[in-house]
Length: 254
Length: 306
Image (cartoon, rainbow over all chains, first blue to last red; front, side):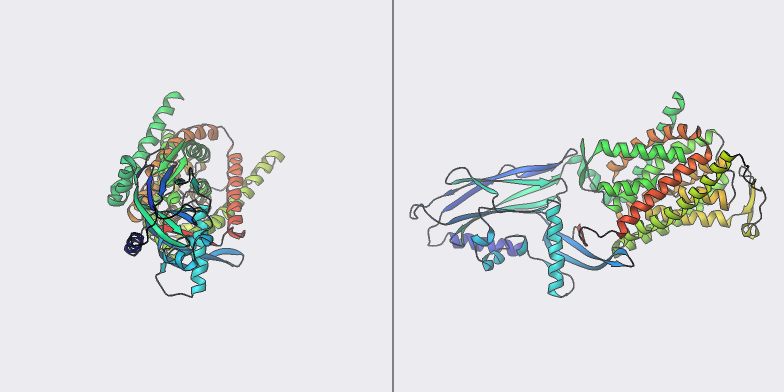
Protein backbone atom coordinates (compact mmCIF):
# COMPACT_ATOMS: atom_id res chain seq x y z
CA UNK A 1 0.00 0.00 0.00
CA UNK A 2 2.75 2.48 1.00
CA UNK A 3 4.79 1.72 -2.09
CA UNK A 4 1.73 2.45 -4.20
CA UNK A 5 1.06 5.72 -2.39
CA UNK A 6 4.67 6.76 -2.83
CA UNK A 7 4.43 6.00 -6.56
CA UNK A 8 1.29 8.09 -6.75
CA UNK A 9 2.92 11.00 -4.93
CA UNK A 10 5.85 10.76 -7.33
CA UNK A 11 3.46 10.98 -10.24
CA UNK A 12 1.72 13.99 -8.77
CA UNK A 13 5.02 15.78 -8.14
CA UNK A 14 6.15 14.95 -11.61
CA UNK A 15 2.88 16.14 -13.07
CA UNK A 16 3.16 19.45 -11.21
CA UNK A 17 6.62 19.94 -12.68
CA UNK A 18 7.71 22.42 -15.34
CA UNK A 19 5.85 20.77 -18.20
CA UNK A 20 2.38 22.27 -18.06
CA UNK A 21 -0.06 19.41 -18.34
CA UNK A 22 -3.78 19.07 -18.28
CA UNK A 23 -5.47 18.98 -14.91
CA UNK A 24 -7.61 16.14 -13.77
CA UNK A 25 -10.59 16.29 -11.41
CA UNK A 26 -12.71 13.33 -10.47
CA UNK A 27 -15.17 12.11 -7.87
CA UNK A 28 -17.22 9.07 -6.90
CA UNK A 29 -21.01 9.02 -6.71
CA UNK A 30 -20.58 7.71 -3.17
CA UNK A 31 -17.65 7.25 -0.84
CA UNK A 32 -19.36 4.77 1.48
CA UNK A 33 -21.13 1.56 0.51
CA UNK A 34 -23.13 0.05 3.36
CA UNK A 35 -23.71 -3.68 3.31
CA UNK A 36 -27.26 -4.03 4.62
CA UNK A 37 -29.39 -7.17 4.83
CA UNK A 38 -30.80 -6.66 1.33
CA UNK A 39 -27.38 -5.92 -0.20
CA UNK A 40 -27.06 -7.48 -3.64
CA UNK A 41 -24.09 -5.49 -4.80
CA UNK A 42 -23.86 -1.85 -5.81
CA UNK A 43 -23.40 0.32 -8.86
CA UNK A 44 -21.26 3.37 -8.42
CA UNK A 45 -20.18 5.99 -10.88
CA UNK A 46 -16.82 7.68 -11.10
CA UNK A 47 -17.02 10.96 -12.97
CA UNK A 48 -14.47 13.57 -13.79
CA UNK A 49 -13.14 16.14 -16.17
CA UNK A 50 -9.88 16.94 -17.87
CA UNK A 51 -9.21 20.64 -17.69
CA UNK A 52 -6.91 21.57 -20.55
CA UNK A 53 -4.02 23.85 -19.69
CA UNK A 54 -3.71 26.98 -21.79
CA UNK A 55 -0.32 26.26 -23.29
CA UNK A 56 -1.18 22.90 -24.77
CA UNK A 57 -3.18 22.64 -27.91
CA UNK A 58 -6.43 20.71 -28.23
CA UNK A 59 -5.38 17.70 -30.31
CA UNK A 60 -3.43 15.30 -28.16
CA UNK A 61 -3.12 11.53 -27.76
CA UNK A 62 -4.79 11.40 -24.36
CA UNK A 63 -5.93 8.30 -22.49
CA UNK A 64 -7.59 7.67 -19.16
CA UNK A 65 -7.35 4.71 -16.83
CA UNK A 66 -9.63 4.25 -13.81
CA UNK A 67 -8.72 1.76 -11.08
CA UNK A 68 -10.75 0.77 -8.02
CA UNK A 69 -8.78 -1.43 -5.68
CA UNK A 70 -10.02 -3.20 -2.56
CA UNK A 71 -8.15 -4.46 0.50
CA UNK A 72 -5.46 -7.09 -0.01
CA UNK A 73 -6.43 -10.66 0.83
CA UNK A 74 -4.49 -13.84 1.30
CA UNK A 75 -5.33 -16.16 -1.58
CA UNK A 76 -4.82 -19.89 -1.18
CA UNK A 77 -4.74 -21.59 -4.57
CA UNK A 78 -4.93 -25.34 -4.95
CA UNK A 79 -4.51 -27.43 -8.06
CA UNK A 80 -6.34 -30.69 -8.56
CA UNK A 81 -4.93 -33.80 -10.16
CA UNK A 82 -6.58 -37.05 -11.05
CA UNK A 83 -5.63 -39.92 -8.77
CA UNK A 84 -7.29 -43.29 -9.37
CA UNK A 85 -10.06 -41.57 -11.28
CA UNK A 86 -10.86 -39.05 -8.55
CA UNK A 87 -9.94 -35.35 -8.67
CA UNK A 88 -7.88 -34.50 -5.61
CA UNK A 89 -6.28 -31.21 -4.47
CA UNK A 90 -2.50 -31.53 -4.78
CA UNK A 91 -0.19 -28.50 -5.00
CA UNK A 92 -1.01 -25.44 -2.96
CA UNK A 93 0.38 -21.89 -3.15
CA UNK A 94 -0.49 -18.95 -0.93
CA UNK A 95 -0.34 -15.44 -2.38
CA UNK A 96 -0.29 -12.21 -0.43
CA UNK A 97 -0.71 -8.73 -1.83
CA UNK A 98 -3.50 -9.47 -4.30
CA UNK A 99 -6.55 -7.25 -3.86
CA UNK A 100 -9.96 -8.64 -2.88
CA UNK A 101 -11.53 -6.41 -5.52
CA UNK A 102 -9.97 -4.85 -8.63
CA UNK A 103 -11.76 -2.81 -11.26
CA UNK A 104 -10.00 -1.25 -14.21
CA UNK A 105 -11.58 0.76 -16.98
CA UNK A 106 -9.73 2.57 -19.74
CA UNK A 107 -10.33 4.42 -22.96
CA UNK A 108 -8.41 1.87 -25.04
CA UNK A 109 -6.62 -1.42 -24.60
CA UNK A 110 -3.96 -0.96 -21.91
CA UNK A 111 -1.23 -2.22 -24.24
CA UNK A 112 -2.10 0.56 -26.70
CA UNK A 113 -2.01 3.21 -23.97
CA UNK A 114 1.46 2.69 -22.51
CA UNK A 115 4.52 0.49 -22.66
CA UNK A 116 4.60 -2.76 -20.64
CA UNK A 117 7.30 -1.22 -18.43
CA UNK A 118 5.07 1.73 -17.48
CA UNK A 119 2.05 -0.49 -16.87
CA UNK A 120 4.17 -2.75 -14.71
CA UNK A 121 5.65 0.15 -12.73
CA UNK A 122 2.19 1.44 -11.78
CA UNK A 123 0.73 -2.08 -11.46
CA UNK A 124 -1.99 -1.36 -14.00
CA UNK A 125 -4.00 -4.30 -15.28
CA UNK A 126 -4.69 -7.65 -13.63
CA UNK A 127 -1.56 -9.15 -15.20
CA UNK A 128 0.62 -6.50 -13.54
CA UNK A 129 -0.74 -6.88 -10.00
CA UNK A 130 1.99 -7.33 -7.44
CA UNK A 131 1.95 -10.51 -5.40
CA UNK A 132 4.30 -12.46 -3.23
CA UNK A 133 4.36 -16.09 -2.25
CA UNK A 134 5.21 -17.28 1.22
CA UNK A 135 7.68 -19.86 0.00
CA UNK A 136 10.04 -19.68 -2.97
CA UNK A 137 8.65 -21.53 -5.97
CA UNK A 138 9.33 -22.01 -9.64
CA UNK A 139 8.24 -18.79 -11.44
CA UNK A 140 6.37 -20.69 -14.17
CA UNK A 141 4.39 -22.54 -11.54
CA UNK A 142 3.70 -19.33 -9.64
CA UNK A 143 2.47 -17.66 -12.83
CA UNK A 144 0.08 -20.51 -13.60
CA UNK A 145 -1.36 -20.33 -10.08
CA UNK A 146 -1.57 -16.54 -10.19
CA UNK A 147 -3.38 -16.66 -13.52
CA UNK A 148 -5.86 -19.06 -11.90
CA UNK A 149 -6.61 -16.50 -9.17
CA UNK A 150 -7.28 -13.79 -11.75
CA UNK A 151 -9.42 -16.12 -13.84
CA UNK A 152 -11.45 -17.14 -10.80
CA UNK A 153 -11.89 -13.58 -9.50
CA UNK A 154 -13.04 -12.44 -12.94
CA UNK A 155 -15.58 -15.24 -13.01
CA UNK A 156 -16.86 -14.08 -9.62
CA UNK A 157 -17.00 -10.48 -10.95
CA UNK A 158 -14.52 -9.40 -8.30
CA UNK A 159 -11.93 -8.46 -10.91
CA UNK A 160 -12.90 -6.42 -13.95
CA UNK A 161 -10.99 -5.15 -16.92
CA UNK A 162 -12.89 -3.05 -19.38
CA UNK A 163 -10.97 -1.30 -22.20
CA UNK A 164 -14.13 0.57 -23.18
CA UNK A 165 -15.36 1.28 -19.66
CA UNK A 166 -14.79 5.02 -19.80
CA UNK A 167 -17.45 7.06 -21.49
CA UNK A 168 -16.83 10.61 -22.69
CA UNK A 169 -19.87 12.83 -22.21
CA UNK A 170 -18.19 15.78 -23.84
CA UNK A 171 -14.67 16.54 -24.99
CA UNK A 172 -13.52 16.94 -21.38
CA UNK A 173 -16.18 15.26 -19.22
CA UNK A 174 -15.93 11.50 -18.59
CA UNK A 175 -17.64 8.83 -16.57
CA UNK A 176 -17.05 5.16 -15.61
CA UNK A 177 -19.65 2.80 -14.19
CA UNK A 178 -18.40 0.41 -11.55
CA UNK A 179 -20.27 -2.73 -10.56
CA UNK A 180 -19.63 -4.15 -7.12
CA UNK A 181 -20.96 -7.69 -6.52
CA UNK A 182 -22.56 -8.85 -3.25
CA UNK A 183 -19.54 -10.99 -2.39
CA UNK A 184 -17.26 -7.92 -2.22
CA UNK A 185 -14.91 -7.93 0.79
CA UNK A 186 -15.59 -5.05 3.21
CA UNK A 187 -12.74 -2.65 3.86
CA UNK A 188 -10.88 0.41 2.64
CA UNK A 189 -10.87 0.96 -1.11
CA UNK A 190 -9.13 3.49 -3.32
CA UNK A 191 -10.30 4.92 -6.61
CA UNK A 192 -7.48 6.14 -8.83
CA UNK A 193 -7.63 7.98 -12.13
CA UNK A 194 -4.59 8.25 -14.40
CA UNK A 195 -4.29 10.59 -17.34
CA UNK A 196 -1.87 9.37 -20.00
CA UNK A 197 -0.41 11.52 -22.70
CA UNK A 198 1.72 9.89 -25.38
CA UNK A 199 2.26 6.86 -23.18
CA UNK A 200 3.28 8.62 -19.97
CA UNK A 201 1.27 9.56 -16.94
CA UNK A 202 0.82 13.32 -16.80
CA UNK A 203 -1.75 13.53 -14.04
CA UNK A 204 -3.31 11.27 -11.43
CA UNK A 205 -5.97 11.51 -8.79
CA UNK A 206 -6.92 9.29 -5.89
CA UNK A 207 -9.98 9.21 -3.66
CA UNK A 208 -11.03 6.82 -0.89
CA UNK A 209 -14.05 4.53 -0.85
CA UNK A 210 -15.27 2.57 2.14
CA UNK A 211 -17.29 -0.62 1.98
CA UNK A 212 -18.59 -1.65 5.35
CA UNK A 213 -21.23 -3.91 6.87
CA UNK A 214 -24.02 -1.88 8.43
CA UNK A 215 -25.17 -2.18 12.06
CA UNK A 216 -26.83 -5.60 12.26
CA UNK A 217 -24.58 -7.40 9.78
CA UNK A 218 -21.46 -6.04 11.42
CA UNK A 219 -22.66 -6.97 14.90
CA UNK A 220 -23.43 -10.54 13.86
CA UNK A 221 -20.02 -10.87 12.25
CA UNK A 222 -18.25 -9.40 15.28
CA UNK A 223 -20.11 -11.70 17.68
CA UNK A 224 -19.23 -14.70 15.53
CA UNK A 225 -15.53 -13.88 15.81
CA UNK A 226 -15.19 -12.22 19.21
CA UNK A 227 -17.73 -14.11 21.31
CA UNK A 228 -17.76 -17.26 19.25
CA UNK A 229 -18.80 -19.65 22.02
CA UNK A 230 -21.77 -17.52 23.09
CA UNK A 231 -22.63 -17.04 19.41
CA UNK A 232 -22.76 -20.80 18.84
CA UNK A 233 -24.86 -21.16 21.97
CA UNK A 234 -27.27 -18.51 20.68
CA UNK A 235 -27.58 -20.38 17.37
CA UNK A 236 -28.50 -23.56 19.26
CA UNK A 237 -31.01 -21.73 21.49
CA UNK A 238 -32.65 -20.25 18.42
CA UNK A 239 -32.89 -23.68 16.83
CA UNK A 240 -34.37 -25.17 20.03
CA UNK A 241 -36.91 -22.34 20.38
CA UNK A 242 -38.09 -22.88 16.82
CA UNK A 243 -38.17 -26.65 17.14
CA UNK A 244 -40.25 -26.40 20.30
CA UNK A 245 -42.57 -23.75 18.85
CA UNK A 246 -43.07 -25.92 15.78
CA UNK A 247 -44.01 -28.86 17.97
CA UNK A 248 -46.48 -26.79 20.04
CA UNK A 249 -48.17 -25.17 17.06
CA UNK A 250 -48.65 -28.42 15.20
CA UNK A 251 -49.73 -30.37 18.29
CA UNK A 252 -52.70 -28.05 18.73
CA UNK A 253 -53.80 -28.19 15.13
CA UNK A 254 -53.61 -31.96 14.83
CA UNK B 1 -35.98 -11.77 -2.08
CA UNK B 2 -32.26 -11.38 -1.49
CA UNK B 3 -30.77 -11.55 1.96
CA UNK B 4 -27.16 -10.91 2.92
CA UNK B 5 -25.43 -13.55 5.06
CA UNK B 6 -23.03 -11.71 7.38
CA UNK B 7 -20.64 -14.60 8.09
CA UNK B 8 -20.72 -16.26 4.66
CA UNK B 9 -20.36 -12.73 3.17
CA UNK B 10 -22.68 -13.36 0.26
CA UNK B 11 -26.31 -12.76 -0.60
CA UNK B 12 -28.86 -15.53 -1.11
CA UNK B 13 -32.45 -15.82 -2.19
CA UNK B 14 -34.17 -16.25 1.17
CA UNK B 15 -37.33 -17.86 -0.25
CA UNK B 16 -35.17 -20.52 -1.88
CA UNK B 17 -33.30 -21.28 1.34
CA UNK B 18 -36.57 -21.34 3.30
CA UNK B 19 -37.96 -23.81 0.75
CA UNK B 20 -34.86 -26.00 0.99
CA UNK B 21 -35.25 -26.03 4.78
CA UNK B 22 -38.92 -27.03 4.48
CA UNK B 23 -38.32 -29.74 1.87
CA UNK B 24 -35.48 -31.34 3.79
CA UNK B 25 -37.47 -30.99 7.03
CA UNK B 26 -40.39 -32.82 5.42
CA UNK B 27 -38.19 -35.75 4.39
CA UNK B 28 -36.54 -35.73 7.78
CA UNK B 29 -39.89 -35.97 9.56
CA UNK B 30 -41.08 -38.69 7.23
CA UNK B 31 -38.01 -40.89 7.47
CA UNK B 32 -36.82 -40.01 10.96
CA UNK B 33 -33.41 -38.96 9.74
CA UNK B 34 -31.90 -35.54 10.33
CA UNK B 35 -31.78 -34.73 6.65
CA UNK B 36 -28.26 -33.36 6.83
CA UNK B 37 -27.11 -35.75 4.12
CA UNK B 38 -29.40 -33.85 1.75
CA UNK B 39 -28.96 -30.37 3.16
CA UNK B 40 -25.16 -30.18 3.02
CA UNK B 41 -24.94 -31.11 -0.68
CA UNK B 42 -27.91 -28.82 -1.49
CA UNK B 43 -26.29 -25.83 0.20
CA UNK B 44 -22.97 -26.53 -1.51
CA UNK B 45 -24.67 -26.80 -4.91
CA UNK B 46 -26.31 -23.44 -4.16
CA UNK B 47 -22.87 -21.88 -3.66
CA UNK B 48 -22.49 -21.73 0.13
CA UNK B 49 -18.87 -22.53 1.09
CA UNK B 50 -18.70 -26.17 2.30
CA UNK B 51 -17.32 -25.27 5.72
CA UNK B 52 -20.23 -22.92 6.43
CA UNK B 53 -22.78 -25.36 4.99
CA UNK B 54 -21.62 -28.21 7.25
CA UNK B 55 -21.51 -26.16 10.45
CA UNK B 56 -24.63 -24.05 9.92
CA UNK B 57 -27.03 -26.74 8.94
CA UNK B 58 -26.23 -28.70 12.10
CA UNK B 59 -28.54 -26.22 13.83
CA UNK B 60 -31.26 -27.01 11.28
CA UNK B 61 -31.02 -30.64 12.35
CA UNK B 62 -31.16 -29.58 16.02
CA UNK B 63 -34.50 -27.82 15.48
CA UNK B 64 -35.95 -30.56 13.29
CA UNK B 65 -34.96 -33.30 15.71
CA UNK B 66 -36.31 -31.47 18.79
CA UNK B 67 -39.63 -31.09 17.03
CA UNK B 68 -39.55 -34.72 15.94
CA UNK B 69 -38.28 -36.10 19.25
CA UNK B 70 -41.05 -34.32 21.19
CA UNK B 71 -43.68 -35.81 18.91
CA UNK B 72 -42.16 -39.28 19.33
CA UNK B 73 -41.86 -38.81 23.08
CA UNK B 74 -45.59 -38.13 23.29
CA UNK B 75 -46.07 -41.50 21.60
CA UNK B 76 -43.76 -43.12 24.20
CA UNK B 77 -41.39 -44.03 21.40
CA UNK B 78 -38.08 -42.87 22.89
CA UNK B 79 -35.66 -45.07 24.83
CA UNK B 80 -33.94 -42.41 26.93
CA UNK B 81 -31.47 -44.76 28.53
CA UNK B 82 -30.27 -45.96 25.16
CA UNK B 83 -30.30 -42.36 23.91
CA UNK B 84 -28.02 -41.22 26.74
CA UNK B 85 -25.54 -44.03 25.98
CA UNK B 86 -25.45 -43.09 22.29
CA UNK B 87 -25.16 -39.44 23.25
CA UNK B 88 -22.18 -39.98 25.55
CA UNK B 89 -20.28 -41.47 22.64
CA UNK B 90 -21.67 -38.81 20.32
CA UNK B 91 -20.32 -35.82 22.26
CA UNK B 92 -16.83 -37.35 22.41
CA UNK B 93 -17.06 -38.12 18.71
CA UNK B 94 -18.05 -34.59 17.72
CA UNK B 95 -15.16 -33.05 19.70
CA UNK B 96 -12.82 -35.34 17.78
CA UNK B 97 -14.62 -34.64 14.51
CA UNK B 98 -14.39 -30.84 14.81
CA UNK B 99 -10.65 -31.19 15.37
CA UNK B 100 -10.26 -33.45 12.32
CA UNK B 101 -12.46 -31.06 10.30
CA UNK B 102 -10.16 -28.15 11.09
CA UNK B 103 -7.07 -30.17 10.21
CA UNK B 104 -8.55 -31.23 6.85
CA UNK B 105 -9.59 -27.68 6.07
CA UNK B 106 -6.03 -26.48 6.56
CA UNK B 107 -4.77 -29.28 4.33
CA UNK B 108 -7.29 -28.38 1.63
CA UNK B 109 -8.78 -31.85 1.62
CA UNK B 110 -12.08 -31.17 3.39
CA UNK B 111 -14.22 -31.22 0.24
CA UNK B 112 -12.69 -34.48 -0.93
CA UNK B 113 -13.15 -36.14 2.45
CA UNK B 114 -16.71 -34.84 2.86
CA UNK B 115 -17.77 -35.93 -0.65
CA UNK B 116 -15.83 -39.18 -0.44
CA UNK B 117 -17.36 -40.21 2.88
CA UNK B 118 -20.80 -39.33 1.57
CA UNK B 119 -20.32 -41.54 -1.48
CA UNK B 120 -19.00 -44.51 0.50
CA UNK B 121 -21.46 -44.30 3.41
CA UNK B 122 -24.58 -43.31 1.54
CA UNK B 123 -23.83 -45.67 -1.32
CA UNK B 124 -23.35 -48.75 0.84
CA UNK B 125 -26.14 -48.06 3.34
CA UNK B 126 -28.56 -46.98 0.62
CA UNK B 127 -27.77 -50.10 -1.37
CA UNK B 128 -28.32 -52.38 1.63
CA UNK B 129 -31.58 -50.71 2.58
CA UNK B 130 -32.88 -50.78 -0.95
CA UNK B 131 -32.10 -54.47 -1.26
CA UNK B 132 -33.79 -55.28 2.04
CA UNK B 133 -36.93 -53.24 1.44
CA UNK B 134 -37.44 -54.52 -2.10
CA UNK B 135 -37.26 -58.07 -0.78
CA UNK B 136 -39.82 -57.30 1.93
CA UNK B 137 -42.17 -55.62 -0.54
CA UNK B 138 -41.86 -58.54 -2.98
CA UNK B 139 -42.45 -61.08 -0.25
CA UNK B 140 -45.57 -59.20 0.89
CA UNK B 141 -46.92 -59.08 -2.67
CA UNK B 142 -46.34 -62.75 -3.46
CA UNK B 143 -48.01 -63.70 -0.18
CA UNK B 144 -45.05 -65.53 1.30
CA UNK B 145 -44.31 -64.63 4.87
CA UNK B 146 -40.74 -63.47 5.45
CA UNK B 147 -38.86 -65.54 8.01
CA UNK B 148 -39.72 -64.17 11.47
CA UNK B 149 -36.96 -62.26 13.23
CA UNK B 150 -35.91 -64.12 16.33
CA UNK B 151 -36.12 -62.02 19.48
CA UNK B 152 -33.04 -63.50 21.06
CA UNK B 153 -30.65 -63.91 18.22
CA UNK B 154 -27.26 -64.36 19.84
CA UNK B 155 -24.29 -62.76 18.12
CA UNK B 156 -20.84 -61.54 19.14
CA UNK B 157 -22.48 -58.42 20.53
CA UNK B 158 -24.01 -60.46 23.34
CA UNK B 159 -20.59 -61.68 24.41
CA UNK B 160 -19.36 -58.20 25.37
CA UNK B 161 -19.07 -57.15 29.03
CA UNK B 162 -20.77 -54.24 30.91
CA UNK B 163 -24.28 -55.40 30.19
CA UNK B 164 -27.19 -53.11 30.90
CA UNK B 165 -30.95 -53.50 30.71
CA UNK B 166 -32.80 -51.22 28.27
CA UNK B 167 -36.43 -51.66 29.25
CA UNK B 168 -38.12 -49.80 26.47
CA UNK B 169 -36.01 -51.51 23.84
CA UNK B 170 -36.57 -54.88 25.57
CA UNK B 171 -32.82 -55.47 25.41
CA UNK B 172 -30.13 -56.68 27.78
CA UNK B 173 -26.88 -55.87 26.03
CA UNK B 174 -23.43 -54.45 26.66
CA UNK B 175 -23.08 -50.64 26.65
CA UNK B 176 -20.02 -50.85 24.39
CA UNK B 177 -21.86 -51.10 21.02
CA UNK B 178 -24.10 -48.05 21.71
CA UNK B 179 -21.08 -46.04 22.89
CA UNK B 180 -18.98 -46.94 19.84
CA UNK B 181 -21.90 -46.31 17.50
CA UNK B 182 -22.52 -42.93 19.15
CA UNK B 183 -18.85 -41.91 18.81
CA UNK B 184 -18.74 -42.89 15.15
CA UNK B 185 -21.89 -40.89 14.41
CA UNK B 186 -20.55 -37.91 16.41
CA UNK B 187 -17.45 -37.79 14.20
CA UNK B 188 -19.65 -37.88 11.10
CA UNK B 189 -21.83 -35.08 12.49
CA UNK B 190 -18.86 -32.78 12.82
CA UNK B 191 -17.19 -33.66 9.52
CA UNK B 192 -20.13 -34.20 7.21
CA UNK B 193 -22.75 -31.98 8.84
CA UNK B 194 -25.15 -34.86 9.16
CA UNK B 195 -27.12 -36.02 12.17
CA UNK B 196 -26.11 -39.55 11.33
CA UNK B 197 -29.63 -40.96 11.39
CA UNK B 198 -29.02 -42.82 8.16
CA UNK B 199 -26.33 -44.85 9.92
CA UNK B 200 -27.85 -44.83 13.37
CA UNK B 201 -31.25 -46.19 12.34
CA UNK B 202 -30.03 -49.23 10.37
CA UNK B 203 -27.41 -49.91 13.06
CA UNK B 204 -30.04 -49.81 15.81
CA UNK B 205 -32.31 -52.15 13.89
CA UNK B 206 -29.83 -54.65 12.53
CA UNK B 207 -26.93 -54.45 14.98
CA UNK B 208 -28.53 -53.61 18.33
CA UNK B 209 -31.82 -55.30 17.34
CA UNK B 210 -33.98 -52.56 18.82
CA UNK B 211 -37.73 -52.61 18.03
CA UNK B 212 -38.41 -50.53 14.89
CA UNK B 213 -41.09 -48.34 16.49
CA UNK B 214 -38.75 -46.72 19.01
CA UNK B 215 -35.73 -46.41 16.73
CA UNK B 216 -36.76 -43.11 15.11
CA UNK B 217 -37.55 -41.30 18.37
CA UNK B 218 -34.38 -42.49 20.10
CA UNK B 219 -32.24 -41.52 17.13
CA UNK B 220 -33.82 -38.05 17.03
CA UNK B 221 -33.24 -37.63 20.77
CA UNK B 222 -29.54 -38.40 20.35
CA UNK B 223 -29.13 -36.34 17.16
CA UNK B 224 -30.66 -33.32 18.91
CA UNK B 225 -27.84 -33.12 21.44
CA UNK B 226 -24.97 -34.12 19.19
CA UNK B 227 -25.85 -31.50 16.55
CA UNK B 228 -26.25 -28.84 19.26
CA UNK B 229 -22.76 -29.69 20.52
CA UNK B 230 -21.34 -29.68 16.99
CA UNK B 231 -22.87 -26.23 16.27
CA UNK B 232 -21.27 -24.72 19.38
CA UNK B 233 -17.91 -26.40 18.71
CA UNK B 234 -17.82 -25.28 15.07
CA UNK B 235 -18.78 -21.71 16.03
CA UNK B 236 -16.06 -21.61 18.67
CA UNK B 237 -13.29 -23.24 16.64
CA UNK B 238 -13.79 -22.14 13.01
CA UNK B 239 -16.45 -19.34 13.07
CA UNK B 240 -18.32 -21.15 10.31
CA UNK B 241 -21.87 -20.81 11.70
CA UNK B 242 -23.96 -18.20 9.90
CA UNK B 243 -26.86 -17.44 12.19
CA UNK B 244 -28.92 -15.72 9.46
CA UNK B 245 -28.62 -18.78 7.22
CA UNK B 246 -29.41 -21.00 10.22
CA UNK B 247 -32.52 -18.95 10.95
CA UNK B 248 -33.89 -19.48 7.43
CA UNK B 249 -33.14 -23.21 7.43
CA UNK B 250 -34.64 -23.69 10.90
CA UNK B 251 -37.79 -21.76 10.09
CA UNK B 252 -38.45 -23.84 6.98
CA UNK B 253 -37.36 -27.01 8.71
CA UNK B 254 -39.77 -26.99 11.68
CA UNK B 255 -42.77 -26.61 9.41
CA UNK B 256 -41.56 -29.30 7.03
CA UNK B 257 -40.72 -31.83 9.73
CA UNK B 258 -44.20 -31.75 11.28
CA UNK B 259 -45.86 -32.37 7.94
CA UNK B 260 -43.36 -35.13 7.22
CA UNK B 261 -44.07 -36.94 10.50
CA UNK B 262 -47.79 -37.02 9.62
CA UNK B 263 -47.26 -38.36 6.12
CA UNK B 264 -44.64 -40.85 7.28
CA UNK B 265 -46.86 -42.36 10.00
CA UNK B 266 -49.48 -43.26 7.39
CA UNK B 267 -47.08 -45.14 5.18
CA UNK B 268 -45.92 -48.74 5.46
CA UNK B 269 -42.48 -49.27 6.98
CA UNK B 270 -40.92 -50.99 3.98
CA UNK B 271 -42.25 -48.35 1.57
CA UNK B 272 -40.71 -45.57 3.67
CA UNK B 273 -37.43 -47.50 3.76
CA UNK B 274 -37.43 -48.10 -0.01
CA UNK B 275 -38.05 -44.40 -0.72
CA UNK B 276 -35.35 -43.33 1.71
CA UNK B 277 -32.95 -45.84 0.16
CA UNK B 278 -33.58 -44.50 -3.36
CA UNK B 279 -32.98 -40.95 -2.15
CA UNK B 280 -29.77 -41.94 -0.37
CA UNK B 281 -28.40 -43.78 -3.41
CA UNK B 282 -29.28 -40.84 -5.68
CA UNK B 283 -27.36 -38.36 -3.50
CA UNK B 284 -24.38 -40.72 -3.40
CA UNK B 285 -24.35 -41.01 -7.20
CA UNK B 286 -24.59 -37.25 -7.68
CA UNK B 287 -21.59 -36.73 -5.39
CA UNK B 288 -19.63 -39.51 -7.07
CA UNK B 289 -20.09 -37.79 -10.43
CA UNK B 290 -18.78 -34.59 -8.87
CA UNK B 291 -15.62 -36.35 -7.73
CA UNK B 292 -14.89 -38.17 -10.97
CA UNK B 293 -15.96 -35.64 -13.61
CA UNK B 294 -13.20 -33.35 -14.92
CA UNK B 295 -13.69 -30.00 -13.17
CA UNK B 296 -14.20 -26.80 -15.17
CA UNK B 297 -11.09 -25.34 -13.60
CA UNK B 298 -8.54 -27.57 -11.88
CA UNK B 299 -7.50 -24.64 -9.70
CA UNK B 300 -9.59 -23.54 -6.74
CA UNK B 301 -9.19 -20.39 -4.70
CA UNK B 302 -9.88 -19.60 -1.06
CA UNK B 303 -9.53 -15.93 -0.09
CA UNK B 304 -9.07 -14.84 3.50
CA UNK B 305 -7.94 -11.88 5.53
CA UNK B 306 -4.17 -12.06 6.02
